[in-house]
Length: 188
Picture 1 (tube, rainbow, N blue to C red):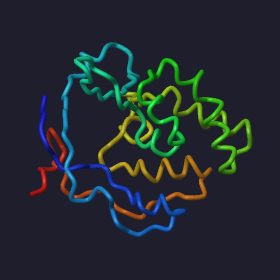
Picture 2 (picture 1 turned 45 degrees about the horizontal axis):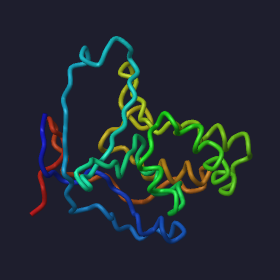
Picture 3 (picture 1 turned 30 degrees about the horizontal axis):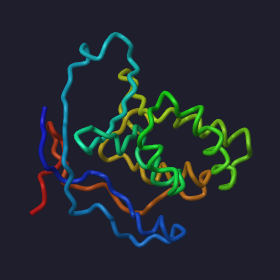
């Protein structure tokens, strides 16, 4: 296990996404650091089934009680799909409730972005519940898990726009390590 500050591996032209996909070529995460908890776990500790489902939460202490304030499995789901008024409720929720709560509204959002109704529902169902699936019998590449150089931002933009936007135009960071914990050293 490793805990500490490391170079942020996520890469995206976030500014361009917020301005009608007019890409700036600027990586909003370049030169940034992240507090990291990295685990290296032997396969046999994960059980006999080859497919596992992962999600994480972030909690803060408020009035002596831990309160969940963020959660996710798939990268960039809540920031781009939920309207601002729904983000806090989503972050406080649990993936077990996702299909019942979000399938219909997310399908409508996808329909507004050019999906036919049946395809919108099927596409929304690929990310609900919001858990990242990983089949250990296949190479890790998003959406089967996530490698640190996977362009998940572009994959999310393609998902949201029914394939009209397929690239965010910024490359992966080049400071990854070839060994555990894989994340690059923190920036100065």
